[in-house]
Image (tube, rainbow, N blue to C red; front, side, top):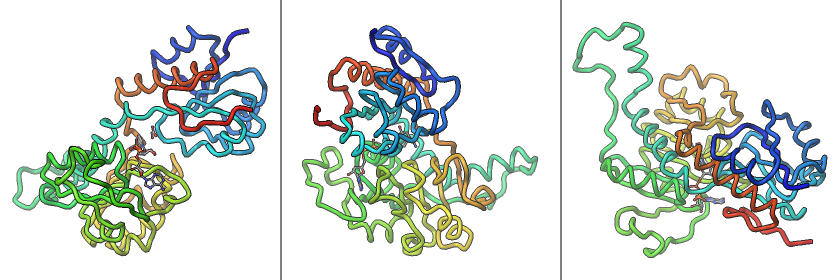
Length: 329
Ligand SMILES: NC(=O)C1=CN([C@@H]2O[C@H](COP(=O)(O)OP(=O)(O)OC[C@H]3O[C@@H](n4cnc5c(N)ncnc54)[C@H](O)[C@@H]3O)[C@@H](O)[C@H]2O)C=CC1
Ligand SMILES: O=CC(=O)O
């Protein structure tokens, strides 16, 4: 019969071509709701399902699924219950690395955009309110010399550190907040002597810009809540390119409204695509629609990796980027 791939949302080339070369491909015309996806996975018609980060692949779905694997078109896999997949012998693949620089670019863009009030400035020009150069028009703050605190010190955090050092920022990090383990100079590599590891509480209290780069899981859900926001500097800015639920968004709106912190640059939201009440009205925010990896080249590379993962799984091989290692039945 050959391989049969289910693709929940069309992906760019060369993804679909690679899959077509390796078997039959069914691309759904629109993102499936949970029941539809669960039904298709349970049908026994498909070897591998290629999912988006919007697709919820939870324990009940996996318990009924008759697929060899799930290839996620994303590096983050918080939409999938990996432990349940492992228990059911279902392989999970993801797309690390190819999107690191693009996402770090967006983190840096949010740092610069919030510091220099880019949304307010753009709106002023479009509204016909730019009446000529003025000494005190839209004064922002310096990025050079400011302290950038990185929560997490993986691929995207490191790429953000590289950019921030180029902008003359002081970079500190906490590798696995809220717990910490010392990172050796060997692990720091190119960053040895250039960035400093600090405990999570110091990261929160000392950062001018606090940028989140941790995966979403039970330890990091609401890592930044009202208590953490209250410990930040009143002129600090929160940057989130990780996952929305890492921040308690309602608490963030409260903190921004009352001046507990000064601003926020967000690429991700707690209940995407919905925003917490009041967030869109706040001038001291830059809000992006989850575009961290959105370049033509990166999305094409992600398509290639996710297709290669899916094909390997269908053929009974270990995918190039496996998230889990199920014990064979
Ligand atoms: N905005 C966007 O479009 C994008 C968002 N992302 C998000 O960024 C996240 C980070 O991506 P990478 O840097 O490639 O991942 P990575 O795995 O290289 O880095 C994650 C870092 O978080 C640390 N960490 C802290 N607390 C942790 C915990 N409780 N459990 C596990 N790790 C913990 C890890 O030690 C590691 O240093 C992804 O998981 C994803 O959610 C990734 C790509 C694009
Ligand atoms: O948010 C995007 C991802 O690849 O993870």
